[in-house]
Length: 506
Image (tube, rainbow, N blue to C red):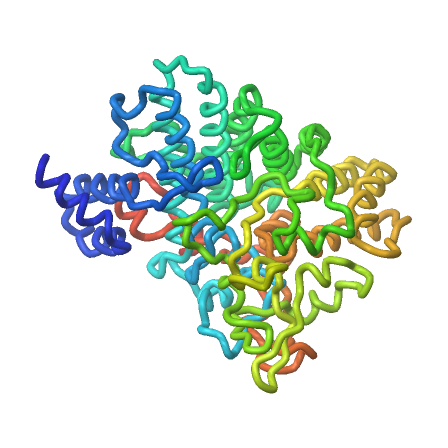
């Protein structure tokens, strides 16, 4: 046991745990031990400080009853779950791709910049396979977060502190978020095709036993479990919360999104109507993305606390406006969709250059009002505008065009100086989809929307410079029904768990 703990301590300072596992995977008799070491290492792994806004040292240790005694222990355990979100593979910004960037990199909102480092090129060009393990970081970190949530939930059974209801609710909501993020990348979305609900979903883990080898549920079963966790979370989640923590608005937003993905339109509307946070007014939209205000923001992670050393904006670019080295730029067709009186054009995009090269750069997560720390901007995970656009889409699908238009205009009236209005029929549906694309550009949504609408990815062949010339992305079109809409389960995970089923075509 002492030797095992020494190995775990050594591995906890390495980013190569899964590489070690892969190299040893052929030694069948050691597979279980290696798996436990890998999981334990992720649980022990070194995280820096975070308090209520993620700046105190989070609880992160073996699941022992001695570690869960006081109300403070459970608060720290909850912070440990939240701290996982700051990992590069989730919302921290990763060169390998994560929640923060992959939904746009995989879709049509961005163009690979020829002067960049070629980060996420394999994702962007849909060149991945099971052996290349695209998004393996998101896969393992999501299950790490789920493991932490399950540990808290299991230890809370014998805990009677005043904060029990709150931390249990947060753990269930974060467990649901972890599984939802996995399901959106590695499985079909319920409305994507006629067979989607019966196709493989993800392994929904509800125990802190790291030795289990769970099979994938169906998509329908996976989403039912996500809904149940979110509904359970609503029972104890507070209406208001400190920064960096979920509240009732956040859980209802996630529930509305989940129901929308499931095609349960009225349920999506009901959950969205429970969101109380107002959509940010037009005159503060730029300030939201420069960290001047949190108008319209429901759930975010503050990147300023000492010790939380992440710079999410480098996901898209490095250096300054006149010396920009872009990784990705706004795709020319998307840039053309922003009207001149649309405040999001100023808030989300930036005219930048590097020598003679001029770019429509991505401003989200890059620029702050004080001009300091380019790229060091708070991570906005949930915003009030989503609830309104969910209502608009769901009402349209129910045939309630007047209600759909009203919900759509609730967003448009706070984005345009002279907002459009009055669409009906297919034009209304297209207007809703357009506003969703514009509102959530570079914000973890686009690829999933195209998947669930059963639409192809079409990039238009334009280059990376601000006038549409320059070097285009190598791959341009992804047809509906392509296997690449579902990323392959990482081969390492398949080797460790023989009960996992690989996605079709890999």
